[in-house]
Length: 360
Image (cartoon, rainbow, N blue to C red; front, side, top):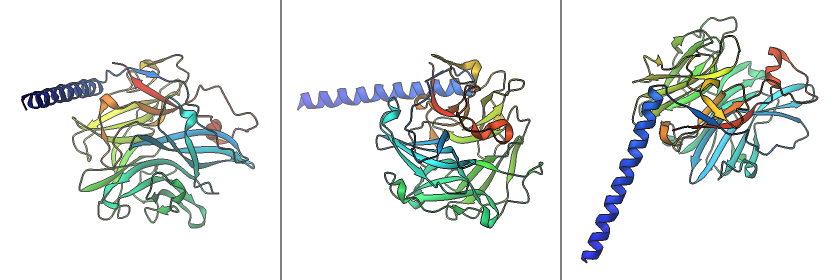
């Protein structure tokens, strides 16, 4: 009996030490993040399986990952050249080892004539469903905005429901830029409201809210959180709740002069704000000045998300356990046989996915 009591005491003591160590690591990582002192190491591009469907594959981009029951699941945009133009759709990956991306199961999603891209992938606990929220164009309804699809079983993406618009039309209250728009929608909930954050490629960082009961409908008018030059805010934002800290948003920006994509970071105690910058082009959250690798293959640190080990709408982030999955490009390579279209061939860019690991 004494031996059992002694072993139990040792086990409890060891568990306490491990918990204290984990908490210390998390606190240290949180401090580095909030002090904007992060350094990163990049992997080479992930060699994910290429879908063979008769089209010319161009890129995988805009990844949104979740970790569930020991496996990684990633939904990303896919661009491919079909007929005489570049088309956007989405793709699903499932794998248990990120160091062996070639083993991933790959399934095409929503590959129609319409635009469907830039997914936010999460489990919405009140509905007990997996959600994709993404940008969608329905030409027949003249709709371009946020849409959603769902599936009940994460292992069966082929059961994904058809897209459904989350609003009736583009809100009149969006900032009056030369082309009023909204894009790159991400979702986070605080237990009462659900927030949809987004950008507009014009320097505006915005959100709408709805109740958990009404989600995925019932959105109020957009609120502009910040309006800045595109050298600070451009697109591809994502918002998290730091496990032992405030809310965090990372947002893609365009470095002055070079045009390189990099990530800024902002924090707030409440999702409504006020939000304040932690970083800048000179000292980015993640950019060429604080990324090392063998080699640093990409000139851009572009649209990505943390590889967090939570998976629901609360978007909990432990900075000690969260590499960053991003899209990159060397600014030189192109896909043979694919002509460049609008925006200096942006849509024909052969983006590849890669991972940033924080350096302690």
